[in-house]
Image (tube, rainbow, N blue to C red; front, side):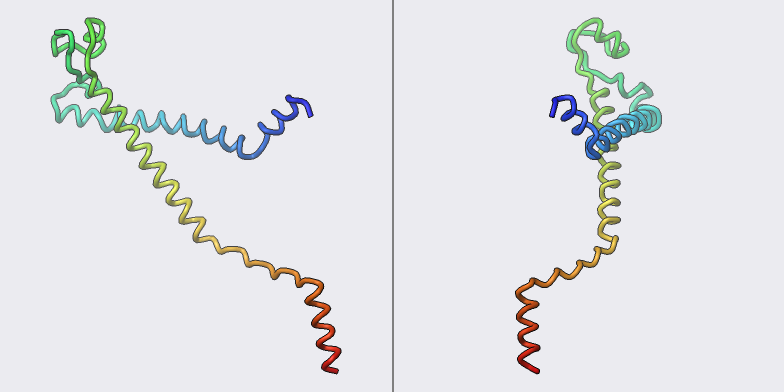
Length: 139
C-alpha cells in the first residue's frame, strides 16, 4: 500500500475527523470566552479597581510613568504586564470550568443509558453432547 493511501485511510478514520471538528469548535468557543472575559467581566472589575482597562495594568521596570497605556510603556522598555496575564488566566479558568461541566454532563448521560443486555454465550458443542447423553440415559 502506498504512503498516500495509508495517509488517506488514516485521515478518513472517524476519530481524526471528530478531532478536527473538535479543534475547530474549540477555537470558536475560545473566542466567545475571550469576548466574555474582555468585554463583559473585566470592565466592571476594572471599574471597581480604578477605572482603567484591566489588561493595561503593569509594573514599569525601566522607569516609565505609571499613567501610560501598556503599549506606550512597552515602547519605552520592559514592563511586568500582570493585568493582561490575569485576564488570560481568567479566560482559561472559565473555559476549563465550562469544559469540565460539559464532560460531567456527558458522563452522566452515558451512565443513564441502559446497558445493552448481554446475549447468552452460545453453548459449547461438548456441553450439548453431554446433555444429549444425559437425556438418553434418563430414558
